[in-house]
Length: 118
Image (cartoon, rainbow, N blue to C red):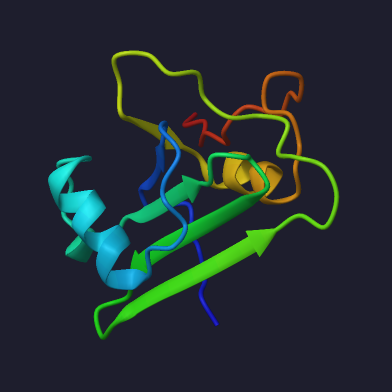
């Protein structure tokens, strides 16, 4: 089981990935195209070209986890638009919404909790 915590960096690849790639192919994509270290412990999120599936790659210190979700109907409704950035950072709640095919553009959440010192 993989646990994604708020302390983890979650990076989403803006451009679609070739889903024939496995762990080694996606790790190479992280190094070469995204200029990121796949061994850093960051959570890398990829989408296929048709927007029907996601792959999540993360290194836990002993090995890689590769998780995939493929929708049985429809397409993922939200994905960052292609801009100059090749990666976009997400919060944990945003990744949860994405996995459940929520639209991050229309959903609002409570602000981050902050300790108030008196």
